[in-house]
Length: 162
Image (cartoon, rainbow, N blue to C red; front, side, top):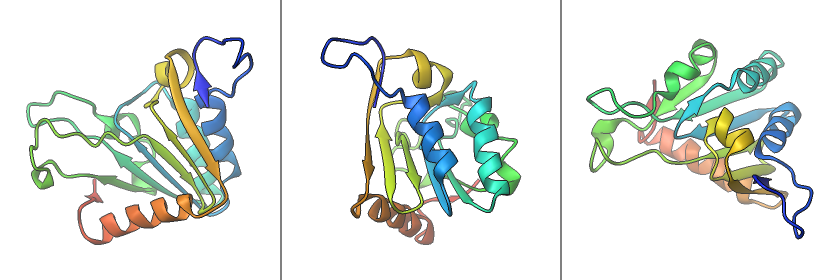
C-alpha cells in the first residue's frame, strides 16, 4: 500500500485511503482501528458508521491529549461515533512517561482475516497526500493474533473505555 509519488517500479498503486475504505466496507463482523492522530476524515467516519449500523462491531483505539491539552485529540474527531462503538484509550497514568509516551499504532484489522499496518494516521493528509507506506496482510493468522492482542490489552485494563 503506497500513498505518494509514483515511480517506474510502482507506477500504479493502491492508496492508503482506497485500501482502508475497502477493508471497512468488506468487514462482516469486526473492525479494530487504531490511530495516533486524526482529522478531516468524515468519509471514514461515515463508512464506519454504516458498517456499525449493519451489525459490525467497531473498536477504536485513539490517542488522547497530554495533561497540558497539547497533542492529538482523536476522540474529538471521532466524537460522532463514540456513543455507539467500543472507543478505547491507553490511559496516560498507565504509561511509563505519561506526557511523552505515545499510542502511536496505525492499524486496521478487518474481522480476523486481514490487517493493514501503515505509517498513515487517520487524517486527510496521511490517507491521500503524504508519502506513506503500509502492508496489507490477508489470510493466515496475523490479523487474528493482532485482534486477540488488543482483546487481551483491553481485558487486562491496559486499554480502557474513553
